[in-house]
Image (cartoon, rainbow, N blue to C red; front, top):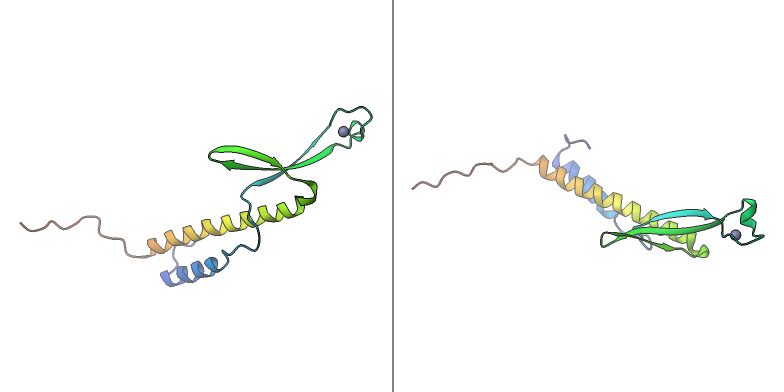
Length: 118
Ligand SMILES: [Zn+2]
């Protein structure tokens, strides 16, 4: 980030990012993972190399990694939710960095307080 920007420039950038913070749909803070496996049933197509593809999401819940399977008909939609989650997370991070930049662009408060005369 360019730290040489003026406070007004930083404010303008911050305002424009804040306007983009509105979700455009459901938000999911998780990663969408696909896996392909063999079921082991005799004569199944997966024995000929056509593996069963499953989609799941993984996310953190109170410090623990959890995963849930996504029904096939929801995969496309769930990917959009996760993309929206990434977009908003990126924006939030940027807004926080801009808030820090705004503070840094101002003269810093004096480190030493003057001693009160006795
Ligand atoms: Zn199979």
